Image: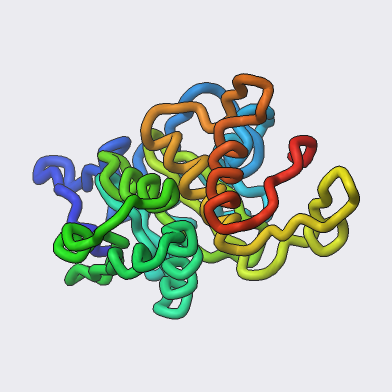
Length: 256
């Protein structure tokens, strides 16, 4: 494991911000911290309490709250600080980047971001400040939210998953899992508007919902599930901002 964390010479433990890691054991020395009470599977819907905080019942490795990176440190990392991390093999990182940048929807905005890979193989999505300084015109809300996520003092890690998309929380940080395929519920019962027409739910919008909605708000200390003005949760409102910018119909109010 090479994550550039500070090692305590006296104890031999590595400091990860929220807790200490024992590299000799491949385990954290304390369990995942719990913030704000118990959340449902994966932590994706904190407005609906459940018995499995931060865990994904479909991924047994996540049930061990002392494990490091799902016991797969060659593929995953558990970072802490000021970045959007794209994880997995190169093809996964490319897909993650593509889905995220769909939400920087005005002409030329996607080209203002780049990826950087450090000597330890960790890939971050960053803003190309020189290119951004030359950009003319007003930016999209999606662009501004993505920049805000990157500039947060906390970290969101994006990974591809064989299961449905979801967001989990680790202290002040977040991990977003993006489903490789169309979700089962979307195939069986796709979203429809009041007139019965199918409402598209493309991968880019799902990534925006999870990263710019759930994860970004959590990183900023806000509650992604908070409701106000009778117009749905903050995350759903953000999704509809992105949909409007991308010329897509809004998400129906009664779809969870």
